[in-house]
Length: 131
Length: 206
Image (cartoon, rainbow over all chains, first blue to last red; front, side):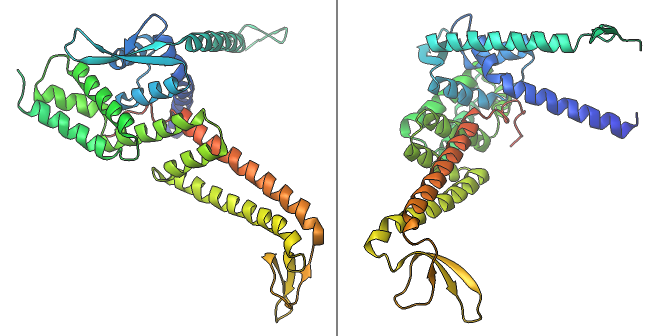
């Protein structure tokens, strides 16, 4: 492969990964709230540490606002120990149900992809690959 | 140590964001500002030095970008679950003021609704002036033909193509075009509401 082809492949991979992350962002945000109430910065840190999701900080509140408008998330201002008010977000009953449904769909999809992407040398259409 | 610049720099930033949010309601606007202030306080985590604050604000992104994202998302999110044609058109009109694509979709949609309106009016007016309302095929002075929908001048040359059929046809075309435009508007608003394309991008530096 030439350098240009390498660069192109890297760009394509980057775009693909980016699309995958964009598509899963709402699910990831909802998943961070599964264990309990959380606030903006804590959600961002969970996303980064647990799933390597780097979300532009100024965008987390519009996402949460969208999820709230959809009825999946509720919020409440709390005078936190930190000495300033914090807005805590929590899953609603609808949000929990939606998360469960989407998670199930995600695992089914991922299992299918795992089968398709099984390492080479596996059985393919009932025949052994030779290469 | 608390820097003197701390409240000033933060409040200037928040004012710059707030200045861009004029098309949001007062309630939404103060909610955005409150969220951002709380976020910066969490980010600096007790370190109120100017460096820490500058870094926290830079990570948040330039005020204009933060405001634009909030505007687009909040406007679209508020309307997306309320799918009446009026709410879809209102959301689109508000989005038209916020960015190039919204304006483009708004113009296209307006043209579409105007086209549907012309057919509807023609169909409704036909019974009141059957000889002068219709879809007309009109020859010009050089013999070329052109189409004209609506009212035709008394005594002018031209052929009414559909006659009374203009009523069902006009209603059908107006209905189909109106529904198509409504669906187009709703799809656009929903796409903006669900858009995450900017979310995983690092903020551009001011």
